[in-house]
Length: 294
Length: 294
Image (tube, each protein chain N blue to C red):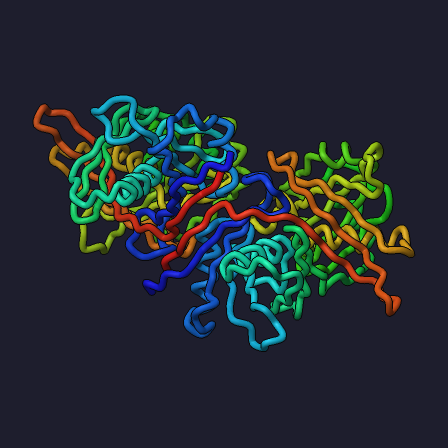
């Protein structure tokens, strides 16, 4: 107690303050991880009241640049997207590193490779398991979201367990007004963290351009403004649906209904070994910069 | 845009970090109020994701020490309790004032006199209108809270419009598990901001010691951890009920169910002119200290 360490609140998936998704990042790089308890980290994450709060620690091995622990107000997560991009931005600023182009984040989900290119921070997803869901569950979600899906949704385990569902177009997605009481009950019963809803922008100049929304009422936040792990889930789902044979970029807009203007680039990359990997990129900007006293 | 000003996130009604109610305080004392728009202030308050965010401005007249504007994620408030105490703490630190014992805050509700005594910050409530409510509305709240009130609740306009209700004892209050879906619907219909529930600590060493909870599900925060305007409402309600003829202190504990440990002292003061005034006091501690970039 009484420990004072550097603190930043970073806005992610935007270059304009207050238009993205905030993450509180606490710099514990100069202390030993044993100096703070799980309960302290959880108490801080409850107090910041943000969807996630993340903590930078020294890595367990020199192959990593730093270790990241990510907490919601309820629990610690193995991985989360916007905290990863925001925390990388904070790490670079905390360590005054202006030249790094690749880093590796240690977290519960494993090693997360990151690249930095002209301010755009990109992570390679470690988790993207795809699983079908039953017709009954799908019908339930159609009812709580008040609309029809154009193909069968699936469950994507990308850290959180997201159900991904497509609707006819971007406008339908933007205008959706879920019944959050029903949705809370359903996601609880199904053990899903929430629903990623997306619709293609039919007249967009960029092909594969989507409007996306992330509903996760169980986690005390009805709608996540701009969601990294959700965009991994969407990219993986689209790959299953369209079987892209070449590296493909998906540009995603999110947050408009919440007064935000988030921009995500999700890439489906065909590796030279024939495998497919999923990457999510976005800008981040430090809005609050200072110190926190425990 | 690009403006960078001092920022603090202060924990209120506690001396221990993360145990109170946080308020983000932005220091606009060195700019003209016309340099920021209502929309900007609202966007910042949405982004911090706290129950309230407050903005310090130069006062309109020298009889005030500063002007405070208080925003929830939905709108600007005429007054709020914990933001007032936290913002006074921040003001004293921002201006490096270690000697003030009395200040006057300018806000939409009018002039709010504040005193500072050994770190304890106290404000005099400007708003404390008392109004009865119908049996039908009372029965509705009993159903949504799942318990019986020991006397008829009342509506207290203390900035927010709180319904104050007493239950048998502190334990009953602590253990209440409201049906937030019902409560949201009722408070919306009745145009109440929420319900202040309180129960007396029967075995407390201090007389007039209460456990209190503040349910305000309409405002996106199901339960406010430690609530200043709610404690004004409780004190005014108790005065109506018990007709205290002498200055009386009410000590209030709040936040235990949310992992907090808030302490409020609400005073019913008999003024020399025969009138009764209501005062709320608490400690506050700066947890995050730095700058914010707009």
